[in-house]
Length: 557
Image 1 (tube, helix red, strand yellow):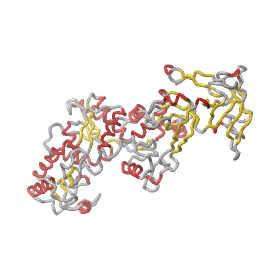
Image 2 (cartoon, helix red, strand yellow):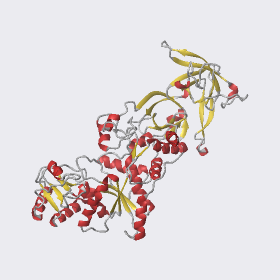
Image 3 (cartoon, rainbow, N blue to C red):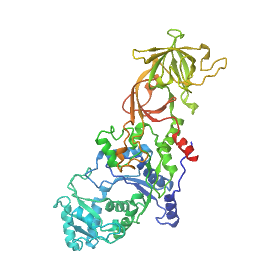
Image 4 (tube, rainbow, N blue to C red):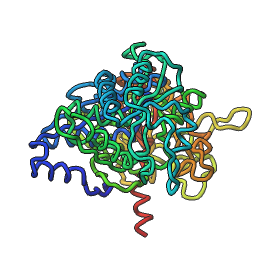
């Protein structure tokens, strides 16, 4: 497999230079700070690999910090899922922390800024504040409350905290520069009134900090050295630094670094839009295998090792780009090819009867569990005179270049015998329901003693020994390469045919012993993950064909 070209890792270069200069006395500490308002998705995987990977590479530490500053959207369910997903991905935070751990300190620092004339309480509503901020090339307008005395603002802030005022009636704003070219510095909001219970602090607080007010200060409290964010926070860095420069910090000032977020073709990672898919029943939940969430990819059979390898290999840049989903699938396929057991499964079964097979005879063939790993050994597979084959592997009237089974044609049954179709049985509608064939007893193992060649090898399952299972086949959840590019709304590009569920699949008996969550290769069909909750339900992880290699080949020409 041709790997995705590795990008320059400028973040590690920055950390290395800081270490060489003794900026943080050689200490490296990072953090992964998701908001617990949804499930982690594949885009978060990149941030996790960067945050935890840099800490590992420089013998530092990385904490998980839940950015739980919005009580209206955050739930304990999401907190638990985030912790679980990070562990599944292969990382263990040094500590699990919460922004809410620092609510008292953040509030104390807010009073400090008010007292020093660097913050004020504004009675304007959100619409007025937004309008007065102006825009790019458009000057801001100072609020009529901007010159309140520190004493008055401090009194109002304390009453805001005490719950005296209704939601939306007042905010606390930093007093910076309403004419600054960076919009983030035009007197940003620090606190809003929210009479809402918090999943950790209950009804203790009636005001909650904004992300920008909580973020850098939480970093400083924890001792973070390098605060790594995605590129959309680039314009926030000046505010991040301004807040920290105004405060009596307990240690060194952290450094914010931004990198391009991970986006894929045919994929949407907006939490708001993903939640809409769940809430409206478009998908079956956050772990629906069509979703880009980590738990959905886990259920679908993506190995954590493949996700980590992909994220490491693409490196970090400061230029936004969209990775091909086929490139990630190529990593998944390579990983599974080396580790997955091989099994035979017939998804759309058609009965094959060997008319010259001795009645009641059962033979067994030793088949390799994984040709890529001899240590996986072999298994015994039963063979009889009644078999299941794929319906697509037979054609009564074969089209050009069709080399599989048809009347008069000989094919190889994988690891067993050469067989030749003779006739068919049809139902009242004219549909073929059974194929009759003869087998060559001298071709045991799949090779003729006279050396004659056949052009096709087919998989099969012994009918008396088969177990019946369900298989879910998946296509892209979004049909467009860039969802929403045409209309501006990604959900307009949903693929109505993104899933096909086959309920009458005939599976090799050994598949009944597949562990929940285990991924196996269905020979000739692809890689399939056994559902973690429902027995004999298998989800197609990826097919066998390397689409990424084909894309690269086309691009090369």
